[in-house]
Length: 215
View 1 (tube, rainbow, N blue to C red):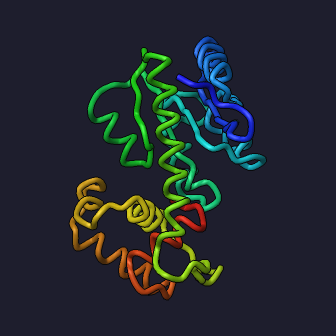
View 2: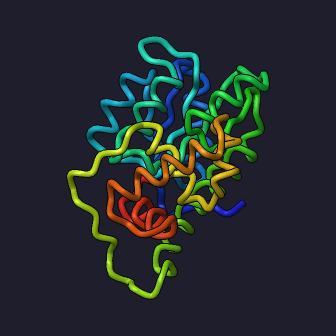
């Protein structure tokens, strides 16, 4: 696997209360060319996020001060950080743990112990997906000018989750299945967001989410 370097160098935020794992994963990722910042828990990670935004977050779940679940809820509810891809790296491997992590907004859920090569592959895949979403903005509609939405528009945490999934190309039915609600509920959320933003359709809603880096 080719190392990342030069202008393509990406910054990762690695969060875990196990110093040995931090050392192992950081060294491996840095060897691959990534810039890695570390934190011992979610609370410390939020402080770092207030100063610098990484291109991706790799996070344990069970940690003191603030666990991974609480951290990702904070990340997804803040429009400044909601677009950042998150990879959960946890010893909790039951299906309900995976489902909870993904429903809260994780993009990838890996179970410890893991293969370092697989971790790198998942990181690279997530970063490429984020880049594709941002590049896809240019192909949305004939008008290349930015979507205009009043700066005062605020989304609820549920609406934010829905618009992120809309921006990823999921249909209302698929979003409903992922969030374990009815399709009518999702349609209602989409309708409410169109009313708030003054946008005309789901495509414009998705483009707005991508341009503002909510997705």
